Length: 472
Ligand code: FAD
Image (cartoon, rainbow, N blue to C red; front, side):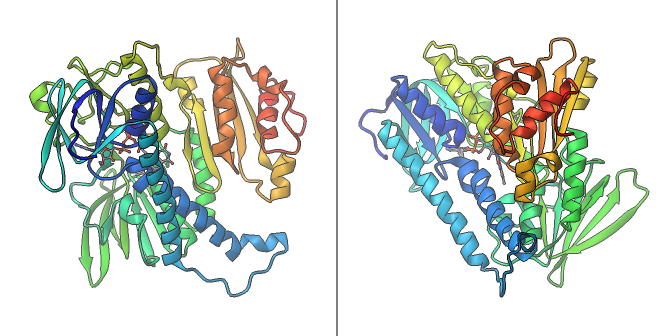
C-alpha cells in the first residue's frame, strides 16, 4: 500500500517482525483499523535472517552430516556424497520467501494496510512514513505500537565488515564453506551457526568471555551440550576476550587475551562470526523528542502488563523492550498489547516462556533451571531420565541426552524442565502447557504417553521426581 486515501487508523504498528505482524493480525481480528509500517522485510529478523533461515540450514546441514557418517550405523551406505552449497542456500531462501509472502497474504486477508517505508513517530498519534522513493506521508492513529526489534551487537574493536567479520545475517548466506570459522560468543546463535558450518566441513573454534556456554540456561545441561558439540569437532575457549581482528593475506588474525590478562594469543581464521548478542533498534524513530523512556542499554521501558511506554498511547513489544529476545515472546507480547488496547485482559506469563537451542542434540528449557531454583532458596526435588533408556530413542539411534524435571518439594508443582535430546524443541511444549495449567510432576507421571515415543522420557522423568521411574 502506498498513498492511502484515508490515513486515520486505530493502530499504527512500526515493524513487521513476529511481534509486529502478529499484533497487526490480532488487532484486525478485534475490529481495529490497522496499518503496519515496515522498512525492510515482512516477517522481520525471525523470518528473514533469524529463526527460519537458521533452522533451514541446521536441518540441511544435519542431513548432510548424518549421511557423511552416522547413517552407516543404520546399515545404509552412501557413495559419492557431495555438497551443493548453492542449492542448500537457495532452498533456505525459498523457505524464507514462502513464509514472508505468507505474511503479506495474511495482511491482505485481515485488511491490514502495509506501508513499506521507515516509520518515525511525530507525536503520540502520528507516524510519518518515508518510502524508499523519498515520498512521505503521515498516518494518524489512536495507538502506536513500536515493534522495531533488534540488530546484531558488534564489538567496538572488531567491527562487522560483512565479508570477513560477519554477523549472523552474513553467516546465513555464505557461498563457500570457510576452512576455518572463528565464532566469538557461545550463546545460542553462536552455537547454532557453529553447528551448521562445522557439519558442512569448517573447522570451528568458539571464543567465549564467560567460563561456560549458554549463560542463562541450566549449567549441567549446557555443559553436556558443549561436550557433545566438542565430540562433533567444535573447539571451545572460555574466559577469553577477543581484542582485535586484522585481515592479513586473506586470513583474519584475531588477537585475544584471557579475562585476567595473564595470557595473550592470536588465532587465524577464514571468517569470523561475532555473535555476542543483539541490541534494540530504535534509531530514526524520534523517541528522544517524545520522552519515551529507555534503559541504559537502549531498550524501551514499558509497563509489563499493558506494554504502554512512558508516553500515553505509545506501546512497545518484542526485542526492542528486552528480556528474552525470542520470536514467540515478541508474538505473545504483541497479542497481549493489542488485547489490552481493545479493553481485554491479554497477558504474558514470562515464567513459562520456553527457549530452545537447535543444535544436535537440541536443548530446550522452560521455567526455572536448577541453579536459579537453588539461588531462590526454593526446596526442590529433581527427576531425571536419560534417552539411553527410552525405547523410541534407541530405535532412532538418538540416545544422547536426558530430561530433567524440577518440582517444588512440598507442593510437587513443576517449576522447570530441561530437555537435551532429539526433538527437544517439540517435546518442551508438553511441559510448558502442563506448567501453565499449574500441573504437578505427578500429573505428568500419571498421564498416558503413547509407546514408543520420546515423550515417555518426560513421563519417566516426572516419575523419577518421586523416585519411581520404571526403566532406570
Ligand atoms: P524483529 O523480528 O527484529 O522485527 C523488527 C522489524 O522492524 C524488522 O523487520 C525491521 O526492518 C523493522 N523496523 C525497524 N525499524 C523500523 C522503522 N523505523 N520503520 C519501519 N520498520 C522498522 N528466536 C526464536 O524464538 N527462535 C529461534 O530459533 C531464533 N533463532 C534466531 C536465529 C538468529 C540467527 C537470529 C538473529 C535471531 C533468532 N531468534 C530466534 C530471535 C528472533 O528472530 C527475534 O527475537 C524476533 O525476530 C524478534 O521479533 P520482533 O518482532 O521484536 O523484531
